[in-house]
Structures are given as C-alpha cells and as structure tokens.
Picture 1 (cartoon, rainbow, N blue to C red):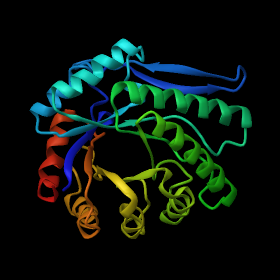
Picture 2: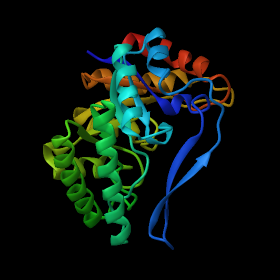
Picture 3: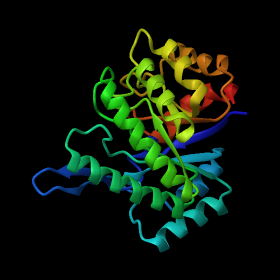
Length: 275
C-alpha cells in the first residue's frame, strides 16, 4: 500500500540555513556554501510536526543537517522514533560518479561513504546517491556510474542502509538511460521516480519504465505563479503510478511561492485518493 511522505525540500524556507556542498578544484577539497533561510522549525522538531499533520515518513536533504555529530544524529533518530515517523531516505544532493576528473570522483565517493555512515547513525533506511552529471547517451558514463553505485551499495549494506538513485541530473534524465543504469546495477540499488525530472512529451511513458524499480515517487506538480498545481497534469502523473501498481512512498514536493504548508496541503488533497 502506498503511503504519504514528504521531502524537506518542500519546507526549505522554514528549516533554517541550507548547507550546500561544492567542489573547489583549486584546492581539491569539498567546501560548504551556506545560504541563510528563516528557521520556523528545527530538524529535530520536524518529525513530530509531520506526524501531527498526517504524514507517515520523510526524506531529509543532506543540506538540512545542522550537525553530523554522532550525538546529534542519535537525537534525530530518537525524534523520528518518538513520532512513529519513518526516516525513509537521506537525500544526498551532491556528488558525480561520472566525473572525468578522477581526483574529484574519488573524493566524491569518499564523501558519499561518509554520508552513508551518517544515514546509518541517523536511522535512515536509504540514501539517495546521484547517478551522475554526464549526458545520458554516454555508455561509458553509465558504466562508471553503475560501478560506483554497486560499490557504494555494498558498503551501505554493511551499515544497514540501502542505496537508491533517481531520475535526477543529466545521466538519468531519460527513461532509456535510467533503465540501462538499473540493468547494469542489478539489485545493488533501487530508484526514485520524480514527476518533475523527465521532459515532455515523453515523461509519462518514461515513468512506466522506472516505476517498477522505484521505492518512492517524488510527487511534484506543475505550479503556476501563485503556487497552485496544474491539477489535470498532476492527476495524469498519479495515474501512471496507479497503473504501475506502485507500492511505496508518495513524497510530496512543493517549491512554489507563498506559504509552504498551504502549498503542500493543495497537492496533499489531490494525492489522498491514491494512497
């Protein structure tokens, strides 16, 4: 049975500073770029608030972690447990398994391993690893990405975490490249299908290619300038989920203007009949 989840990206104007990761080619080091945002709610307070609002799970972006200290991660694990909310996925939002700069690729893989450790300590079931930023028609890039995902999947398994990837960034921007990658990695990793990341007019057909391997769908509507969803288009996306007999998390994605909770409620009402 499908269940209701949410990504912390859908609340990114409420959860305080965003701590994005960047690569400094001159120093050969990762750096953190902090983007200030208001904080109406801390990450530790979030699980209880989500449970109160009827959610059953959450996916947390890595740039929302104010600390990766083991004591803090233990507190976060406890906050999810106390709220009876599942910490489904840690969304690692940085890294390129297809980089032609071998120094950067090796550093990114070390970084991904560190975040697998963090996911394990925080109690996340899965960690989303970006497949890569190479173009989707590059067969060698798909092989490199698959090799990296298999390696990371084995490492994560030892930590009690499952690796998943997504139709996110260039390499998996088409259904065909996504399927080639999934066939190459076998059972080493699973997938997330995001409504917003395949292009018109083929996006609905591409959903049917990746949904059978997906553990969650990112239910992102097309929003107008006031943050209202294109209901007809959103329903068409959701119908592909129903037709695929999908059984997993339907993760609400809202990044439009105005009150983020109100924006989420508008799509939550539409999603309700598909749970």
